[in-house]
Structures are given as C-alpha cells and as structure tokens.
Image (cartoon, rainbow, N blue to C red; front, side):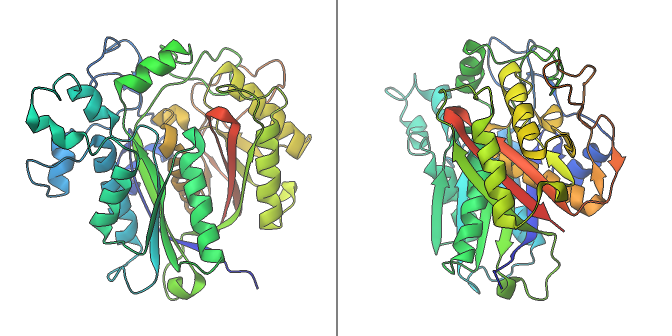
Length: 395
C-alpha cells in the first residue's frame, strides 16, 4: 500500500491574526483582514488595500526571545513563529527522533530590510548584518535553527506556487523514504519592491479584491507565513491526524512571464495530475480553494481550467484571498491551512465581495459560510512564469 502522508500540525500568521485559532475564528465569521496600507513606508500608505500582519517586527522578535542586535528579517520572523506553532501542535518533543527535514518557500526573502538600509550600507556598519539575511535561503536557515532541524533543508522560490511546491516536495520526500517527517510551507513579508512591482504591472486594486467577479480589477497584496508538519504513517502513529496530503501536481504552460494562458493549460494539467496521484475522479472533489487572485487574467483562466476538469459539474469553489490578500510565496501554505480547517469544520468559506458572475463563464463561487460534508479539498496555487501547482487534501 502506498505511504499515506499525514498532517499532524499546522501554524499560521496572517492578516487574520497570529495562530490557527485566530485565523479560524475570522474565517468562520467571514471577517476580512484587509485594510489600507499602514506599516510599510511607501507613497501608497493609506491609498491601497493590503493584508498586513498587525504585529511589529519588535513584537515578533520578542515572541521569539531574540537579542536586540539580531538580523532576522520580517520574512524570517513570520516564518519562525508559524513553523514553531505547527511543530508544537504536532506534539514533537524530540525533533531528531525521526529523520526530519524543512522545505520552506519565499519570494521576497530579506528584501524588507535591505531595501530599508541599502543607502546606509556604505556608511553605517551596524546595518551590515542585514546584507547576509537578504538571500532567500536565510529565512529557511533561521527556521531550521529555531526548530533544530539539520537532516535536510531547502528553499523553493517559484513565485506564487512556491509554498504549494514545498508541500508537494515534502510529501514526495516522505513517499520516497528519504525522510520520515517534513516541515513544509512558506513565508513572505510586504515590501516596497513588491508593492511597486505589482503596481507597475497594473495588477493591484485600490479597493478590496473581488475574486471571480465580473468587475474585478486587481489583487490585494498580503504578508503571511504558514507551515504544516507532514509525517509518514510510522512517525504519525498514535497522533491526532488533521488530514492527509492525498494528491499533488505541478505543470508549466510557459505561456507568458506574468500572465496565464487563455485556456488555463497549466492549471488544467496541474489539477489533472493531482487527481491522478490521488486516484480520484473529478466528481469526488467536494470543494476547490481556488487561486482566485481577482485579476482579470487569472480568474478567467482558472475558471476555464475548472470547466475543462469538471465539465458542467464544477464543485463548490471560492478564493480566500479576499480574507488575507495574495501572500505570494506563502499563499499555497496559507490556503493549505485553510483547506485543513475547512475539512475540520466541514465548512465552505465565503468568497467575499462577489456580486456578479463573469460573462465568459458564468461561474458563481461560494458567497457565504456554508456547512457541507467534505472529504476532499483541491487547493490551487499558480505562479508567474506559468508555474502551476494543485494539492488535494483529505480527511
């Protein structure tokens, strides 16, 4: 029998709050965490809507009991807190009891600090400590240090599918017998670079995003970190199982640097592969946590892909980015945690701000919190460059 990949712990920090309980509460009350930009020094302060974590860097550092002169970036701080929550929930007291690895995703890396200090690097030696924390792997190394993981660590950066790919790689490492347990997920902080970059691409909305709505006009960026503990059946024996990673698929339609193809080829292939790995028929999927960025291109492309996979029997679907914003590399893990919460609560979360179906497909997402018997949840994460990943979670 094929090795089942158990999920024994989850952790998250997002605009909805710190910890799974806080996020669960906001989801079950259909309360968005989006607000006008406040904390990042930017010309867009109080002008664009984002999903900010309310805690300051100092408060996050205090939570981790760090010394005053640390070089943890906001990306690393968020990641450490979420990963430690996941490991705690998994009841892991001795991390070295089983062969344990860490697969962490990020796109921003330590940019939030290097963009803050880069004009001072030449004249202020006190800022030099942030140069070494700029690269993407630094947050992974710090999370590994906090968790005392030394067996295997790696960093994935495939744009907005990064954390979903981290989850997929972790599952494959366990299935291949390379590791018994893997902490998987992603972390990204808001930065001027990403705010300005997405603004220049004309992808940001000035208002709260409206996934799958006919009048959608762009996404809201967010910051977050989320991690899951994946364990082999041997390592998970006797533990409370939150769910299973039942399927996964990755594809790349190589259509465009930042746009999805009109026929949703990458998304279609990723979902198709995930169903094959899980040994499921499309009709067995109960809920789709869609990528749903609320950009004109993505939502139409994903809708077409959903029609290609499910035909006329598209399951209940919706995007939770209307709660958190698009958290870039963390999105796949944030939505994996939300998928697990959906399975635990047997609830479908609202696709907020929807009023009118897009004329091209007529698809209508879940608009209010709804009770439903859920066995299988499909979660989509699609990135720039056409890198598309789909995950299937089960009870």
